[in-house]
Image 1: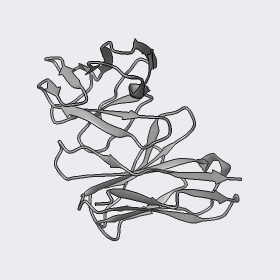
Image 2: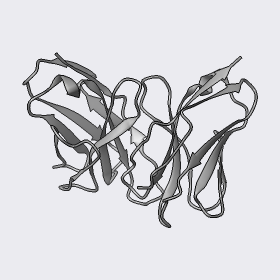
Image 3: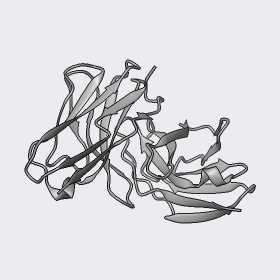
Length: 113
Length: 107
């Protein structure tokens, strides 16, 4: 099992450009999450999904869109990137039961100039 | 998700036990208490979780008070590799992380 993978690992964007971050999991997990982490700060939840075809907003959803068309994939889109979105983005997944823990991907480091 | 409060930092001597407190006074009955840690810029790593009873695994022990308003993560014999940010989360599924506790283990 690869666990949770994220593509790409690094990316530099210019202000106003768009991009999509891909998160994939091979553990048949129901829940998937997108977080951002700014330097010296904790993780903040952007969006999450409780199953295929569903999405919900987290703490900091503005400027991001997500889609969960397939159970194993969770996409995070930036339509018009801003320097404030420079951050490390982590994806996570977990199983359905309340007692299950999250598994995290390695992160995507995004810089917007 | 329950709001959690943790001290921003703490030091621990190598080989000694590290006791990390967490306050989660608003936790609801179906919310588990989870602990994760993050070493440098890696993805967070799961440590342990519990609902009402104390729990122990190969990494740590979790002590939850009877009223479930607080908990303590115990690293029994801290090593230099335990230097990390430790996060306490009270969650049914949303998993909102706070600022965590920066633990520094010194020789």
